[in-house]
Image (cartoon, rainbow, N blue to C red; front, top):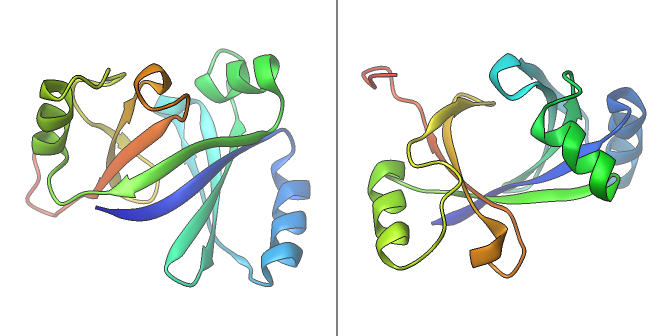
Length: 137
């Protein structure tokens, strides 16, 4: 398992891209809409890790609800795993609460699933795995 990215919920994607490009001295390399999550994402690469800016496109999306409740800020930490299905089974057996029992398709060509913050010291954890050409999705 390795740190894959840090997700930050933002109200204004364009303004936030400008802030983080200046802060991190790098440019957004990808902007992607994920309709299933009601979000548009922007990615910045910082050495071996990425920063994902998340902007709600649907007022009922998880990001919109997060911002309404907590305001802008860190939303989640994502870890890359080799086999997301096996990792979800392992973590569930170890007593972690899963938000997603099965992976969904997320941004950046990844399968994703989340662990509930109640079981991870109030930190939303995302597990992600690259989608392979031969994956059934």
